[in-house]
Image (cartoon, rainbow, N blue to C red):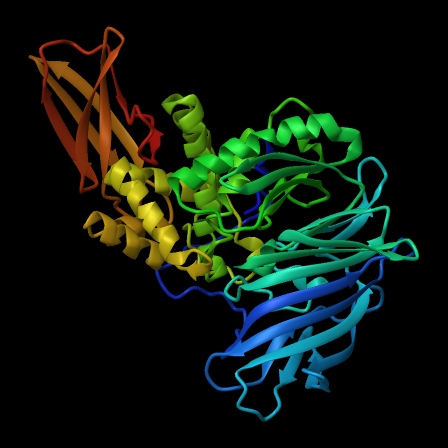
Length: 534
């Protein structure tokens, strides 16, 4: 999902409080009972004179059970911002609707037809969601920036990740603009009067949080094709060569994830320099990166890896409730580390995880909450060090618990099962249990739904060819159960032993013929814990 971003770009402004229990998520979005959006066609007209946009949205709805009233999200016109709806049609007939509290409430006509097309005609100035501004070089620009639920400011839609649909953008704009958007370009036509129509269509279902347009003066290039997926860079003309270089790594990242996770879902992979509130925003097939990500120094490889990992986790296999956003952010965080490990080796994995460990420990001091925190009801507040770094650490621990072969097999099975769909944490747990043949209830309960982490006080001694190790858990809220590795160092070489912590205190005796130079906990960075001094 988004980064503000990973490591040096990763600055969170989110504060969470309290603890959570393993109960139903508290996602408060009111879902339609049977109306399932199948397809959106957004016709948008942009201009240079004002920030007002005109829209015609064709929305194909399938009623899965009864044909019941349903609602679309759209922020209504206020003093300066918002949308005014002029017409809503069902087919060619004016629909029965009301527009109240930022909802278009539609009552379908009496018919047995289960699939219907609705059209919403509207106009107004979006306050958010569509960022109408100038680039850092002073060029006028329009960028979609929807995460988490800002699409409703400019696109009538079901603005929640549980309802995904195919999408088409038909952008009419002054012909001096270049246009990129979610999907594959299927038309570019000069309309006369200095106007141009550009159409993009994405055949894979996507959530509104990750659809976008980019309209400004761009320099663009095809970087390469990876398994017939075109990978491109869209940057400001002033940044042309630097941007093509900085974003070039995207081809290698895409290949790594396809090879290791499964097929890529979208029509293309465009990498776009943009006006975005985030360090990166993982829009499906059209990723937005913050303007200063381009400097020609190739410093954003981890950010690019994070956002491309989202194409699998968060975009294709999406969380079904906001409280389970770690299925997006924790996955993208750890899979960016996995990519870096594949390129730079195991030391890079350890380096990244140790940075994340420090952030997790520091964050917990002022925000004692679990990864899945059901006390949160505002999707703008679900992002935290917990859902990013601690979620990533949980996957790291799961990988070590199951072993690389089983871990990757489970990841591939999870993606295959929920590709282009939605999942909850329990769905991921079930897949990993089926793949491994292990009962993982305790693992997921303590790492996802329990606040905190092991806080360990420990010591070691050596006498009479016996190494004695004593470990005590100091945290009060929960006794964690885990396997910890112990590194015994002699002459620069490390031998690893394992200790199974089932209780708050445990000791381990190891027969050794030599006096260790040192003993360390978790030398390979597999366990999330905080080491307390004696």
